[in-house]
Image (cartoon, rainbow, N blue to C red; front, side):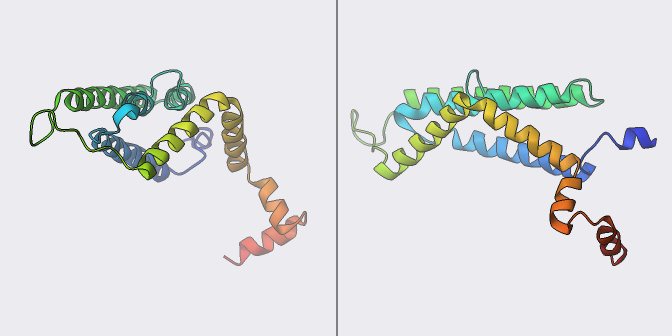
Length: 176
């Protein structure tokens, strides 16, 4: 691998693979959670989880697809991301239809137990955060880009921690 090619990645390959594995695991968790009855909030939650526009899940997927751009593995990234989104949409649609058409155990016409207030409050709070990410997505994206730039060039951090004396940094490095 040439030195020009080695400078493309900010993080080691194992970090990218760990993030990829975490995304796959969290997609499986999302599919599992899709089978919980959230009542009226089920539709909004389903659209959010699936990453449909204009919600924050879509913005995140769009940013990942844009970042993949013309990278060597862009086809794989696009395929996995869009395939996972399709699986989530299918799972949420199936769960929604199963919840809509199911009947409660027991006597016909028996009411389905409602969610308690804490559960509804937590769900509404999380969905409010999703709406906030949509409304202030520019600020969140700007913050993420700024963090990525700082991770790519740690000299500002090193100078802030060790001071402007470059020799102190070299002495510390030699102790390792």
